[in-house]
Structure formats: C-alpha cells, structure tokens
Image (tube, rainbow, N blue to C red):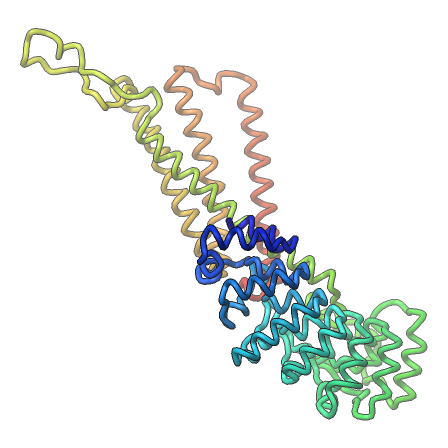
Length: 453
C-alpha cells in the first residue's frame, strides 16, 4: 500500500490516492503516526504535484508537527518544494501552517545540515520561493547552518549571484549590514568565499556595499585579498585584486607561503573552497554507510536463523524409531536409540560435539554482530568496527562448519582433494581484502562526518 501511494505521489495520480483511502480510511494518518520516513507528501512535494499535495493534506488531516517531519535524506516537504522551486506547493504549505499557527515550527525546521527551507531555496537560486518564504517569516534569514553559514554565505558558495543581490537589495534591508561581515565557523565572510572562488561579479558587487569590511580576517588571520594567493594565478585574479584594492582592501602581513600553509591546514570539507560536489560525495558515502549497516544486520540475522535451524535438524537427521532391542520379546531390554536422538551423535560423538560447538559459536557471533551494529546506529564508531570483525569471524566459522558437515556426512575430507585448498585460500584472501576496504572506508567516513563520531 505504501509503495503504491509513493508512486501515485510521484505521478500525481489522485485516483490512486482515493482508492487507497477507500480501502483504509486511516492509512494516511498511519503513515505519519508510525514515523514513516518517506511519505507520499515528501514525494509529491519533490516532484511538484501540487494538486496531489492539496488533496493529500485534506484527506490526511495532517498536523503541523507531522508536516515538518524529515525523510530519510533529512528533508521536510517544505525543504523539497523550496529547493525544487515548486512555488504553488510552498504557498499552499505556508497558508496551511499560518491557519494552524505553526509558521515558526515549519519554516524554522532544519535539515541534517542545519538548513531551513529558505536556505534550500537560496542554494538552488529560486528567487520567487525566496520571496514568498521571506515574506511569511523574515526571521528565517537570520538563521545559520551547522557550519555557521548565513543565507548570504550559501548564495556565494553555490554561485547564486542573482539570489545574493535579491537578498541584499530587496529583502534584508538594514540587517544586511551585519550579515555582510559575519563569518562562518572558519571565520570566512562572504567576500572571503567570493574571492577564493574567483567570483569576479560577486566581488565587484560586494565591495560597493558601504557597510562591507574588505579587510575582515578569518580565524586563520587571512583577509579576502589573501585568498587569491593560494592556487595558481587565474585570469580573474588581477581584476579581483584591483577591485578589492580600490575599495580599500589590503593583504595581511603574511607571506604567500604562510597563506598557503594556513589554508592547507583547514579541513577540506569546511574550507571556503568546498563545492556542492564535495557535499554530494559526502552524502553518497553516508548513504553507503547506512545501507551497509542494514545489510550486515540482515546477514547476521540469516546466520543466526540458519544455525538455530541446524540445531533442530542436524546433518544426518534424527532417529525416527526405537532401537532394535525394543522390538524383542524381552521387555527389559535397553534400546540402542530413541526417536528424536541425533544419528551422527550415536555414530561419532566426539566429531558431532565439535560440529555443535562450531554451530554454537556461529550463533553467538551472529547475535554479537547484530547487537554491535545496532549500537553503531547510536554513532559509536568502535561498535561499528567491532561489528564488521564479528561478521567476518562468523563467515569463517560457517565455512569451517560446512567442511565439518561434509566430512561427517560423507566421511570424506575435502582437504584431501588438491583443488579445494587453493580455492579456499583465494576465497579467504578476497574476504580479507573486502574487510580491509570496508574498514578503511568506514574509518574515513567517521573522520569526515562529525555527527557519526
């Protein structure tokens, strides 16, 4: 049902929506009350299906709190509609929250990067959406992201020159003075960013703002003009240098080498030269991490179920009848076996106990893997790394268990066949390489993603 609704939201199929509600009139409310991370409202807002959004909100009796719910990618319906420039949906949502006195809750809802819907519209350069959001809740322009970026930082960082001018000239008014010289968490003002990214048009526009401090220094003691001397000379550099100099700008007392050294020690994902492509790469790695965690939990669950089943139906099966002595006329005879007893246990107790020991180890290792990886959902990197090792150890035990079962059932040792051992060694090497790759990538992800540490 949920899958059909999501597809209907994507295509704007109102009939499918009505059919779903007809089958279960509480289905829409259930989707939100159960904490579903991806609702049809998110999907319709992303793809601009305005009529579907209107009808969905009418049928679902959605609350303002549910309307601000984030999906698995960390965006609310208003974020998605704003980022994609779906003005009609943005206006309808804003009208709804005004009637429910929830403008602040919805408009100030932040995504996983600490961005509001206004921030999302600025990043995408959607001027009409910026205008509507600003009119309905102008205080959103004062909010900063988790990296202390203002709406002006985001406009410059994502090369949205038109949005930058629109905000400063028509929307911010007197509050623009403070935002022009406000630094992000690296202390970079918008002039630092525009200069570092060689945005000549933005630099030329900014230096004409009377309240701009052209000589503001970031947390590394660098001025905007210093940002030109980081990389190789660019054709725009001379124009930018002249523009800033004419506006009264000057370099700091550092040498070019000092400037390069200072900037090289800035974290790559938070430097003034970071791009949207770098953010996309980080998002892709985070998605990989989440999917891999889910995959390991499924794998460990299968292992635990499989080993439990082995205990119920061991290799070789169980005796279905009483031993031959039970059929004799002597009622006091002791049967050699009973129904339900393991056949292999009667035949070779020592080897059967070895097999059951391996099976028990697999079961508890699988359970440990599940617990550790679940603990990793609380962003504890040590638990995650131990979970990978437990999964690796579990796979090795299962291989050993399989070889032991073959030996017990067929009375043949696979290692006596010359072709088996080389393949086994190759398989172990491949598994070890995969483990090392997962470990390195996970470790890098923990280091570059602050909220996972």
